[in-house]
Image (cartoon, rainbow, N blue to C red; front, side, top):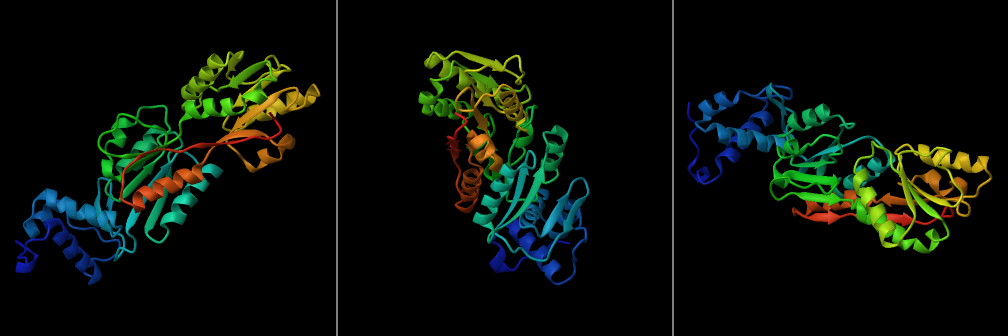
Length: 336
């Protein structure tokens, strides 16, 4: 049958009318939590609406978290009412203390207005694709850290631009007016080295330890080479530290995500009775609590993930779009 709208409702968007109808059915118990909704074709026939209008109404309820789209199965009732303004899909690469800081910053800013679901893709392309494709209609906003070896542009473009916030990388080539909060990997390293140039001058050579599996490592290399060329610094780039490359008078920059190179450098220094900050220098990426006290303190270049999370949350709360460079922090300690 065709649904006969009251006269005063004819000016309303039809998809909102459908959302209200289904919402009332849920509140009145005609549809219960866990129930599957009728198919799009059935709803279109029942209420005399186009399939596109039906999908808009279902997506509206999905974004509110009232119903949930289950990939290749349909729509199911999730709860009876929307108790938040936003429903956020947060997809990060892996669990680290830094990502905990990022999540906490988003939560603290939006805790009274948003429901936040956290996912991890662990640099797995298929998992990344599945998590996004299966949840396209279930959230008002998608915050994504797309750190993978594969090109994920096509997948990210499936997320409507107005819902899409990319973190960590200045991801280019995506469609629409979307937001990015990014690190300038090349510029941050160049600026950090320039800021400690007076300390670096006592060392004979700069050594960048750049593992092959470091994401955006080519950008770090660019910043390193720019500094060395501009200031005529003798330099070396190696994938890992070995005793063969360990030399008195070198200042090392490490990026290993598990800090293996930091540990090995300290072991080699102990073996030869070298002192950090005097016989060799050390700059490590990403600050951890232990680096504040290890060997009297390790100098670090560290992304400000709290700031990054706050910026992303502000974009959502203020309903705006922007490309924001999130500055890194340089913390000088006795290792340099």
